[in-house]
Length: 185
Image (tube, rainbow, N blue to C red):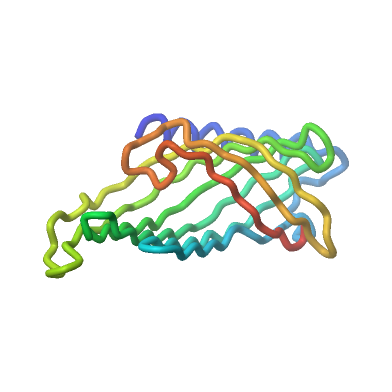
């Protein structure tokens, strides 16, 4: 948890520095620099389902620096070959920082703190075999992507990886491919 606390503080310092260095700005809030977006995902296949709702709001401090925060909810259902049904839920908060080394490409850091709960059932008898421990799970997603202007916003595509790799993370041992749209970018 100390790693996550350090990352939150570092991100806040980074955001404050970006605001202070903005040329020609009186330091006030400019609502035209806000953007809204996030990700929405659905996946249904034989014995597996996933629902992901992750809205985010951000602020473009300079042409090179943007940051913000978001909420997320992820729901997994999976039935294995032994007819055991796994159900996992995650609800959490995240902050993100983006650096644009060139106009439409970005590098992103996104610390998250998710709360997990769920269970494993015998699909035949519907008996609960195991309750997944309810707890907070930290993640630190690092990666990059692109923001392609479209209309009054931008389509975003990114590839991120959780470098903490907690065994209960929703991103354990896998890359995160995210597609979305930011309004007001």
